[in-house]
Amino acid sequence: MARKSDLKAKTKKLKGKVRTLRAKLEGAAKPDAGVKKAKAANPVSPLAPKGGFPALPAIAGVEFASAEAGVRYKGRTDVMLVRLAPGTAIAGAFTRSSTRAACVHDCQAKLALKAGPQDGAAILVNSGNANAFTGFLGQESVNAISGGLADALGLPASRVFTSSTGVIGEPLPHDRITAKLPDLKAALSADGIEAAARAIMTTDTFAKGAAAEVDGDGGKICIAGIAKGSGMIAPDMATMLVYIFTDAAIPAAGLQKMVGRLVDETFNAITVDSDTSTSDALIVAATGQSKAAPIGDLRAKPAKAFEAALRDVMMDLAHQVVKDGEGATKFVEVRVTGASDTDNARKIALAIANSPLVKTAIAGEDANWGRIVMAIGKSGGVAERDRIAIRFGDILVAENGWRSPDYSEADTSAYMKGEELLIHVDLGLGKASKSVWTCDLTHRYIDINADYRS
Image (cartoon, rainbow, N blue to C red; front, side, top):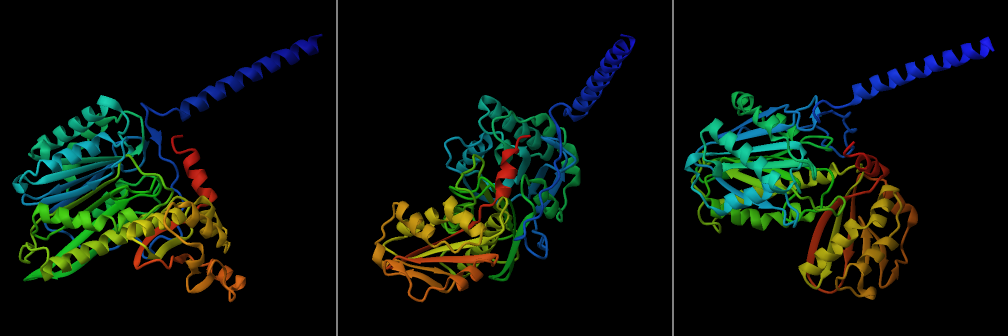
């Protein structure tokens, strides 16, 4: 009996120690005031630019700063500030999602004012919290940040633009951001663009930047841009978050026309997972500090050269977003030609690019062209079976309503092992065409998104 009592006592004591240890572990894991420890970074995408973040030119009239505000995670920068000199013209494009974030509504309203650029401007972006679907609290947060930054920099609140990206449906702890405004102001510098690009990342595995230079009338014009985006990418205006800066002198109305023309062929032509963000924002700022003559007539040669350079930067950033698609290992162009009109070409291209069956076949390096046939058929676009030709790269796999007589499974399978692929569908109906860009769908996408909030 004594032995039995001793055993019970020891067991009870051991259980107590287990409870104490469990409580300590839970306490250590509990975030302080809603702030979580930063997760280990995802492995860098195999499609990331081999040279890392590019050397971007300093844009006269633009300064950057970044800080760790603890919006959601500790141990990483999560807020970036851009100060723009007086004389800066601003254009933008934003998601048309019916559940778009408060900051998107605010930016759209401010750009609609068509205010003069004489007061300069500022952009503040936070990661970790999207400030979307947060009711009246969302606008209160935008007002608090815009007002605080306007006071700190001596700007009207109407010239302060904010963006937020991260978890949807949680109130933004804006006090953590406003508390960092003095530090951000003090840290402003012309060479802080790379740090700013890193501060706006969420599930991104690499910071994204691109640049271009063009000879203007009487001087050089520089363009530099940064972007973030990895998942929830099926833009309906631009992409997740994009900020492009130039020293060109161009009126806001002219800049807006260019942005409107270019956005559909760049950011609106990419998809990772067919999901459009609540927070999509593209802001382009032109400081007017280049020595080149102002760009006036958009049909003139200098304007066309500038627009082409701006397109190059936008396309580069758009492609980097796809190459950083969550879990991506393949970068894929889906090119549709011979369509009856551009809308049909786009509809069919997106049906192929967004198909989980197509994307998983690409991930498995499976030359399953039958899934392309399926996607064409389900798209709702105009197509005739016996006119369709399908190529993987230069390899003709199907034509005239069935498999090509010269089809080689070995050649096509070998082609599918490449990192960059082309799926080309010719509909044989007309002269319209459209290209969109996507990535494969791997198990890593599930891993990232299954515990996004945890």
